[in-house]
Length: 73
Image 1 (cartoon, one colour):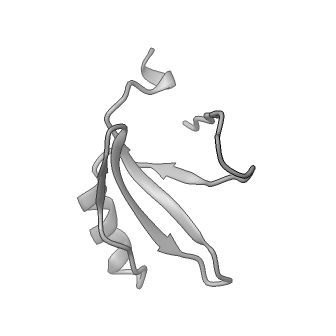
Image 2 (image 1 turned 90 degrees about the vertical axis):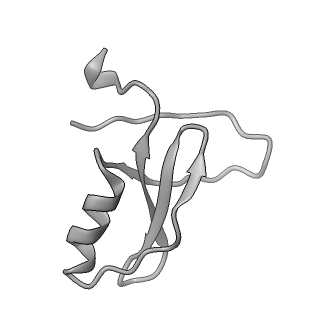
């Protein structure tokens, strides 16, 4: 399943990509074994968030949501 959310912003226009996972710690460990490095986990009101660097540069966010997912509604 996939989900797209678009939110208004007070800052400059831009975009971010976030991948969603069921259990952040488990997913991070599975990917670390494959050589993926992560930032520290931050606790946001909407979920537990980390980021990882893509080989070509740029970061991708990955989080464990604390909100209902569209697929579960």
